[in-house]
Image 1 (cartoon, rainbow, N blue to C red):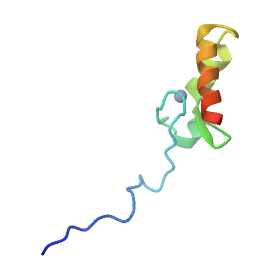
Image 2 (cartoon, rainbow, N blue to C red; image 1 turned 45 degrees about the horizontal axis):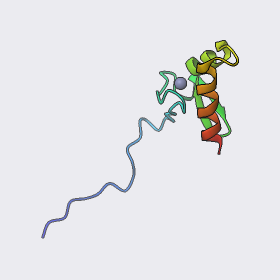
Image 3 (cartoon, rainbow, N blue to C red; image 1 turned 90 degrees about the vertical axis):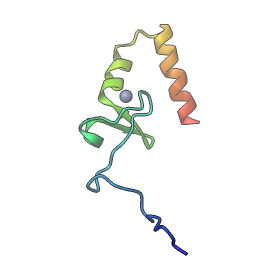
Length: 73
Ligand SMILES: [Zn+2]
């Protein structure tokens, strides 16, 4: 009988933290330095500036707000 060895640890990229943005689901090039951590959630700089520039009350704004609300639950 031959058994294949199952790796006990998940592969890591040079021990670096690679956060994924909760909104666009992208991993920023700068890693954790390329965004913000809010309540344990990662938000990349791109999304952060997008949210800031959104017009309050616009459909896009509501879309983002709804998404964030769902994540905070
Ligand atoms: Zn993002």
